[in-house]
Length: 306
Image 1 (cartoon, rainbow, N blue to C red):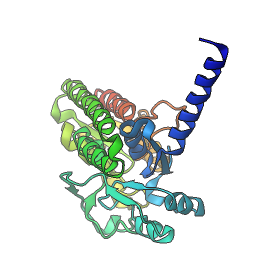
Image 2: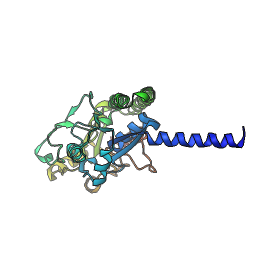
Image 3: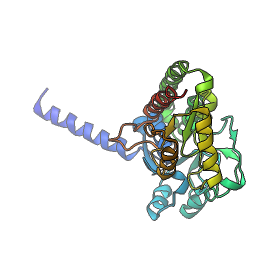
Image 4: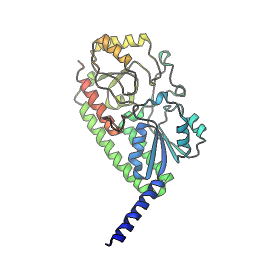
């Protein structure tokens, strides 16, 4: 091949790459976990922007002018639903959003949450829902998320439907492998010893699926404040049941659990990832890695219980 033909071929490849980049489907996701799932399914055909980034708390998110501009240009917005994004309607109204909106959790068997006088200060917009939004903590629910996202991307980009289906099938296989592995890990611990203390109530789906009891000082939202009575009861329960599995979360204020640790003499385990991934250069930048990390951390804590 002549030098001229090589240069021409290189130029055509550059033009092709630039064209593909320019025609990627702009997708906005509400928070980092959804952003990762959509990126896995969309692959090179989508350009994903996440509103609430890694190590950030979607419960207390406030939209910025930049977020409004980003949503204005999107063709698809993917949200969790179940009351998680109490701010969504205000944002879509502000952006006069005309694209497609998909609720990834549609079809998930939602869990009810207990709303009591001590946990009534939920984040604005969430108070209207009595559903626990943290459905992604059960990998079988993320399988439902995956199918919904495949369908949505295929609808707005029919030419890429086969790619989305292939990527979705591969992700479903990875989720099945994760679920099977996690169940095998927890089978080492008798169910009577499977109790864990966390900073806020984000692991009920995880607990129900893997048969682990989670106790939390805060409610479902990190924007709620526990009463002194709640904290005292939790400390008493830890002492009575000899619970040693105590964990912080990556986007929560550790002061409350540090107080509990000081009063019980229990050393907290490593932090758990509840509502957000780590940053790209962190240890848990993807949903699959986050879940494996949480399983390993929780298993280590359960082994300390008596």
